[in-house]
Image (cartoon, rainbow, N blue to C red; front, side):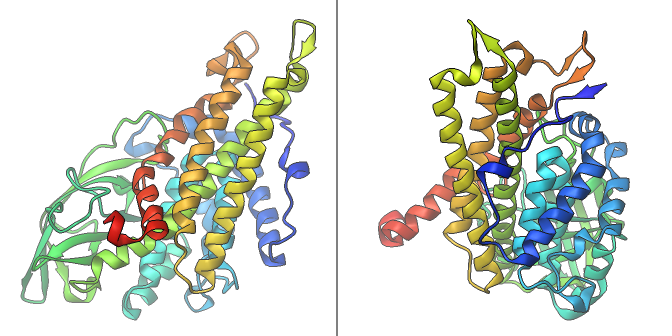
Length: 410
């Protein structure tokens, strides 16, 4: 079975350059592209179309990423990381390259594992950071990041959240239900946002502890490799030394990681959009209609030019947000801007790429030729980028608050 990815020319090689990136990041892009081409591309159809189940968790891919040192990128040398000067920029660049072939791998195994869980552990008290972060970097444990609940996701206010912990001798007892929790069915630990005495706290939960009940994975439209399951917490004991953020500091800890996650979503959107763009450009050169190549029609010339501009904008925005983070500056409003633009172009470019392919864009497999169509999975996978890690409408509101002032926007 051949793939629409086979021999696909990279238009980014002539439309985009890494002129303003540090040499360190350019080297990471080369490394990331080599890994993605060798490990992810040959299995892209399998990875992107697998049905959700506990057995679908790609532990072999996680191990390959760990063995290649990819989890080392965002972290300091003292915990087994590479100690890069621009760690977030490196991680975002890696995510773009991985999402070109498999958005689900990028989202679940890197954005979720390295940025949401990893950077939460990186900011945890030293005894937690020093024990768990090196193990995550080495691929020995799988982590989950639990903020959302059935009635609380974008709104994580104390009024919306129902997961609570009460103080007991030696620790806390945690009860509630978490939802949309990435690879919880395979996780060993979970960084968990909850309420203690009415204030947000962040706890480290042992997923093998008594009272932790993990449901079967959800059946989603796309991003199927990002296995999400409900988690019921029934009077789970959490020792005092597993408190990542004390009451009153938990929401800040969660939002700090989610801000980095939004940069990751933006980078993954660029990767998906670039892949769809490359499919469209290649098809326009080889396919003719009414005596002319499709690329000769001005409508498609203008649409592709507009998409090329949007790609350049989205890539520059996620890189700027990452650079601000690496400089120790809160990466807003750029992270919100990057998330909106990056996630939207993934949807927009893929829609047009499918349209220009006609019926060839609508199939999953062309049976007569034995060819799988990568555009179909990008279309399914791209939509969630506009929703998760802070819906785009909320990102627009946060940008408006900076532009117009909170006294006006609320």
